[in-house]
Length: 354
Ligand code: GLY
Image (cartoon, rainbow, N blue to C red; front, side):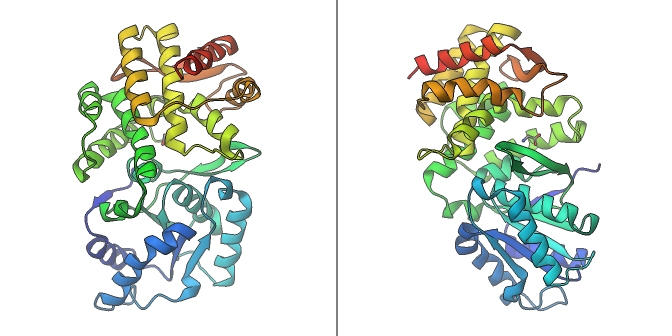
């Protein structure tokens, strides 16, 4: 599977050329309620201001597909609604879906397009930090099912990913911070110097985003189907996804990156226990991430459920729990077998940090 290109710059300059080269029979733009309000106007403007071409004729309302925002809507029901609309609008196999949004929109939109008529083309325009540095890159698409995050999905590459940092100006500070968790993760698994740079809490710039994108692209290029090194990108996600799922339907849900930050702290402890990560590095990770993300409390019941959720993770093998951990900051450890009791200890350790 060939890795998609990533182009960065102004969407008003990037999109017309892409549409003229892809020559879609019809374009559909998938948004959630937030990106419909804050980001779609940027695309509408591109369509209205550019010299017209067959691929930039005025957008009509029936080309915009909107669904409610949030992880709770990353479901088969939403995908089914998207398919129904595509059928209603007579989308053929040469149609193109533009996924304009954060990770929920790009994961779900890629999956919907990837299955429709056995796969139509799609491109991503990520509008969040998390989308730009992680979710939109590398061809993982999918939905949550039966309470398990990303449990159904496809590997399917977008035609291209277009990154325009102007979209980040529409985001609240909490969202920006959440997205940066994946940047910390990229640094921890691949680049010690980048970790030291991020620890200084620099202003989020296009250059930093590009640097983080490069880590992910380098890894996915080597292993698009996650047979080996790509699994390093799951650091923090085994425990993090479990915590995200557990809190999803409470009145204090965590954003994805916030849950991954908790996961990275727990998995740093497991890395010390199982892979020789130095104590000093664990303390460094704990301090840095707690400074940025604060501490999350869990009830006794929630704590008990973490292990069973981790046991459902896609990364597991023949009934054993497997995690991507760290040997050192900058060096991942893949497919490490972890016991239930060790996960409990890691969560206890995290709770004691509060
Ligand atoms: N988000 C992890 C990966 O794309 O492999």
